[in-house]
Each structure stands twice: as structure tokens, then as C-alpha cells.
Image 1 (cartoon, rainbow, N blue to C red):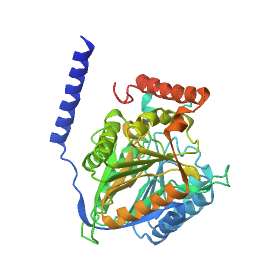
Image 2 (cartoon, rainbow, N blue to C red):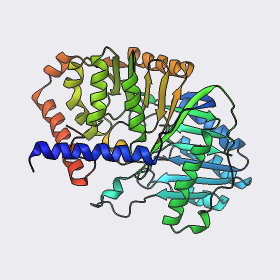
Image 3 (tube, rainbow, N blue to C red):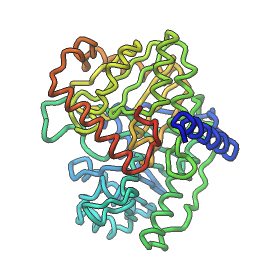
Length: 415
């Protein structure tokens, strides 16, 4: 079959799948009636999280990708142990790769107190070609008594990078939420907990939670909670981003630690810039994950040529996954805009339509842009050494090869 006919057939099949998905599963709507609080870094987040653990009366769900053996990890474990000892049902769900170094001593303490601990997809071997091992639990969700939930990107670890104490604290966000959306958050964490319990042969832990969160209004904020999984919600988070960018009239500001979005996402950004929208992207300036860090730079020239502003956060390690559009739409969550988050991992984001919330997040982003970031200029790209260019295109090519080998993303993701 000629390549143009094959491309046409593939595009038609993709549109048919999208249409079928929308027909079978209506798009989630924004809900009113919430009270939300934006939390800045671990300095804000952990005191509030610990307070919720200490005051919980019935049930605690806590999901995290990382759970480090530092002071924060120790304090969270101690609080969970105390909660379980006073009769609270404690369910801790950690990723089997990200939290594989979780100490045996802490496991024993939780078990002795009656708390339940599960690992999502534990790593049986260090080297495996099974592509399913790439499907990680990257969400950072917690729910307390079915009344309060946290959504964001902050793992259980200290903000200070132990190997680089001179750097600024790790830059990230989370949201504390009350209101009707707590019910779907509770349902999501409970469902995945039960699935993992069955998979780990812990049938005694697989009973549904008896709590039914209230859907009563507690505030004025309008929100939508979305997840990304490998069954019914494969593109929900990306689709919401793209829809909001498509409707943007004045400004799109994205801060994302790992930024290697697909073809259609990049097209939306370029189209927004072409119609006069101010598009600003804040990216990681420190080298954290080598491959994605340098592969992302392959798109710099095209973004700059389209009129998109790019900044790199240099004060420390950036872990944020947030965006603000037109000062009214905002999102905070765990999903990066790269192949691993958008195509593989289980993610969760909260989307908020509120001028006050979006304004507070936009103001903090502006402070980071002015004080902690450097703007990327076209001249810097043009004057890059041949070695740096080789690293960029070598990493970009390797990402493409890995995606081809795993079969994720389709033909056009990284075009």
C-alpha cells in the first residue's frame, strides 16, 4: 500500500477510535461546590498531610510513586502507624519500582500496627524486556475519611536534594480538596487498591471500602478530576490539556518537569501561538533524568520559531506538573507531558476553573520565571557546540527507538 494511503487509513482509524471512545464514555464535566487549597512545595504540603493523618478517624488511603528513607518518610510512617494503632484503616499503596527501597523495618512497623501496605507491580528482575514493567503507579493521591483528598505531584521525600544541598528546595505543587470530587478520587484509589490486592494474593484486603463520600457542596470552586490509565482513560488528561489550549484566547503557561509531548499536543501549542496567544513553557534546567532532559531540547528551535517562549528553571530541581490558561483554567497533578506519563503510567490531575486559584498559581509561576529561570534564546541554540547537538539528537533518537521497540505512541508521536 502506498505510504500516503497508509497514512490516510491510519488517521481514519485513529479518528474512528476516538469517536467510539467518546460515544461509549461521555466526557467528564466540571463540578461546582468545592473548597481547594494550593500547596507550594513540601514545606506547605507535609504539615497539612501529617495533620490529616493525625486527625483521621476511619480510613486513610495514601498512594505515592516515591517514598524515601529520610526525615519526611520517617515522620509519615510514624503518623500512619499511630493512626492504625488507634483503629483507623490504613492503606498505603506504593509503586513497586519507585519505592522498591522501602525499608523492611518500616514494613514491619506498619504490619505490627495493623496497617496494610501494597506495592504496585513489584520488580521481579532488574533486567526484563516485558514492556508492561514500564506501566508504573506515578499518582500522588491520598484520601482521609472520604472527606478530604490531596492531588498533586509531591512524593514522600524531603524538598532538599541530599547530594546538592546548595540548591533551592525541590519545586512542586499539590492541592487539598473538599467537596463532591472527593467521591471519584476515593473510588479511584479504592478500585486500584483492590486490583493490586488480588494481584498480590491478598484477598482479605480486597473488600470495597465501606465509606461513601458525601457529594454535598462545601464551597464555590469548580473542578474536574481526571486520571490516566491503560484501559478506559488512556488520553483523558492529555485531551483536557489540548481542549483548553485550543480554546485559549490570551495566555498559556505550562510548567512541566519532563516535556516531550506528542505531535498533536505540539500542534495545539503552535496553533495557539500563531493566533496571538502568549505561550510560555517553564522546563527543568538541572539535569535530572538525562535521556528526557536532552531529548526535549530537540524541539526548542521549532518552538521558538513558532513564537513560543521557553524558560529553564535553574535554582534547583523542578518537579512541577501544572498549567494556567487565560487566568481562569488551571491544573495541578502528577502527569508529566512526556511519553512515560501520557502513554504508560497511571496519573491523576485536578483541573480547576477559578480565577482566584488560577491567579495564585499564575503569580507563583511568574515569580519562578523572573527569579529562578533563564529564558532560552534562539542565539543560544544556534551557538551550541557540536557535542551538545550530538547529545540532544542522540537522546531524541534513542527515545524514538525505545518507543518503537515497545510499540507505544504510534507512528506520529515524536514526528
